[in-house]
Image (cartoon, rainbow, N blue to C red; front, side):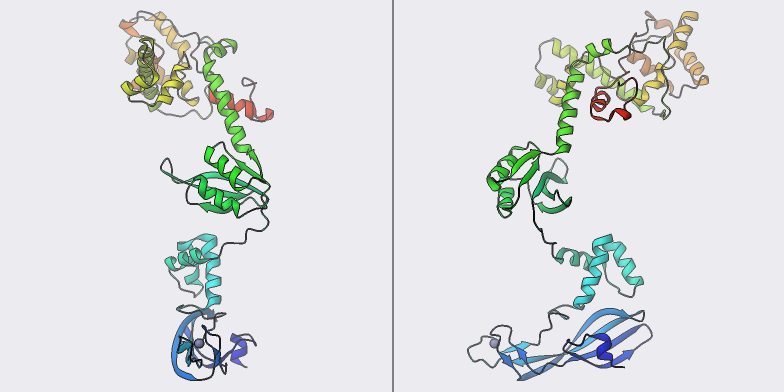
Length: 423
Ligand SMILES: [Zn+2]
């Protein structure tokens, strides 16, 4: 059988000279069939041979063995006197590119697993397929791979993406017809996006957020395009607006929605967590909340309060907009509230009871919290157990039956997903 026809296609200018079949690899010796060669500079043909040299390439595995191709390459003299290149090498850009150690067809195949599964996994797979290659080589192939053509671009989505969150951002561009990322810009500057958009005169629709630089870039770079807010940002903004209203009107809303009282035992959620730290966290937050209110009552500005408490201005603004401090999480409310009834009874029956005794009793009833958690939770509700008990008033509503963020979600979620109380 003709080996040349087996290894190359009939139009390829190569001839297989010999094959060296070893235990775990195959060496194939190849030489060129071309009679003459063109100078890469002046393109004039030359038959005048200068010298031979041997190049080695990795190729597809042969019968499960890794395979090397040894190409006897030639150097020619350029015959044109005014050409600045006097000697040039024979070129075979379809198979063997200059300065490469792998055949072009092998590189093309290797870049497929590299792009699909990444450097390290592709390295492992390729070595089992007798194509040993390092992960860094595969990553180099990914970097060198040409980008797919943009095609006809009609609708583009623009948003930012983070190299490192709160530190450095770039811009991401998505083709909204194919839902594929088409480009990443190194920053989110007006100039960069403007020049990118100017290269795409066919764009008809641009979706973006309300970032000013994107707005100006879209107006300058693609004046023909219609600018719209994308669905995600619309929903996000709506959710945030509803949440702000909910936080502001929290006190009034909690009067409208029938609050759960201690007489009406709370249902412990199924996924009841055993999170000990939450009550402690709530204790700290309550303390800071009170400090914040005190400073505010003294007439301090938000930034002055922020400075003195070491908190952010927006946090201060958020907390000052509400009268009642909401408990941190929806899930932990079952921790103590579920036992209010029992605590009330016990405090009536034994006003001088020690907190430790109460905790032991609650533990037997299934209370999951630690002693310190119980103590902090009771402090949160201003319930004093034992000798210190001056008032045994339990809160009529704990302000934990609804959370602004949950309520805001109820406005956005489909009706089928909203529970009875939320409705
Ligand atoms: Zn030349």
